[in-house]
Image (cartoon, rainbow, N blue to C red; front, side, top):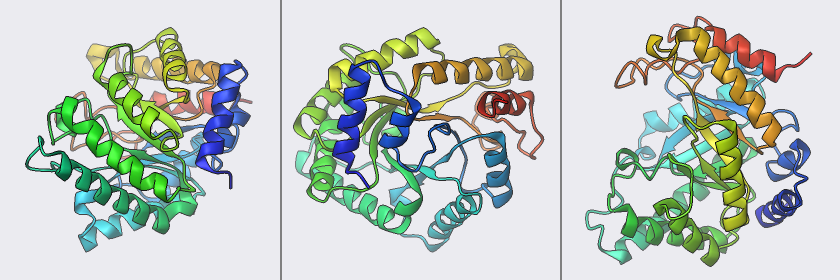
Length: 321
């Protein structure tokens, strides 16, 4: 298997030449088939072999789910993780695993040494997960939406993010991963002057072999805006951009289930045209645990497994005749 460094350089070179293709995407993420670079998010608590079979039949190339490092000590949680990987394997679906902590990394966010220690500990957890599940992993994504306070419980992102992630990258670079590493699942696409862009510049310049791609979530963005973001990422960080989460809810205020289907169809078509190496859509089923109506209605299916028009719209795009 090619090293993450070589895969990243190959993708970067081709993108700079304007010649990136889906074949190049599968070179960056070897477990993905050339025409299966679009996946869907699932929740490990509800993901089953039946879901995996249906996801595969719909044309998706992988599943994305999250693993929380602060819960890894529990036997029940460990079983949820192993069961989710087993479900994916039953349908030969590789996994994009997003890893983060749901608890603050330190009680003293102004203590750099504690943040460095937390980064080293987190890297150890990542290595352990790769050892257990590496054969099934499309990539390991470090964190999810750290630019939102809800998902960065350590707070003070401006001062805490870089020390933690730099320590993480340093630890991981010392023992290179065979699994591609992407980061950091930003809720807002990096752009000039943003906190995410400034942090990326420092981390990527100091640890150029850490990431294979930069991930972000372009909710509400048009194809043209996504294209602009892809160019910004490539030009400023010399890495490809990937979309680890995007979706649209089927609320009546948003046009209902038919509008959801139409927007998903357009999004998939745009992503194909842009040759984005990896894209994950949120999410397979409606989530009953969502905090509001919007959060509960992103699914291609209802929470009890009934297909919405979005499922057929996606399958039509993903399984062209």
